Length: 122
Image (cartoon, rainbow, N blue to C red; front, top):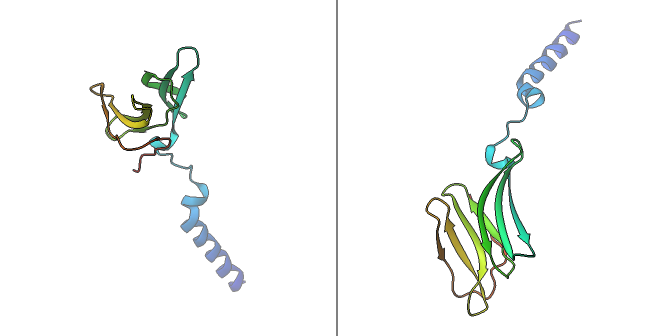
């Protein structure tokens, strides 16, 4: 009987220690619930960038840009800037930044032949 009671107490203590992991509902980080979507309209040759919140089922318009070239993009929530690739007059694809607060756009690179992937490192 003492042995059974001892084992039962140990099991209860283990359950209490791990109860947060076992019984808790996962806490979702707000930035983890967001998707960044690039929609291309073939007729107008326009890319439209959106931020989509999966939990709230809402989308936020970020930028619309006309371009004939494929473009990759990344959005920085920290400084509200959209980074994207776009073609320039020398037929290369370079990296650009659009500050969504001021709507100022600037070219960041000049030496690459083709910028085709980017990711924000938090």
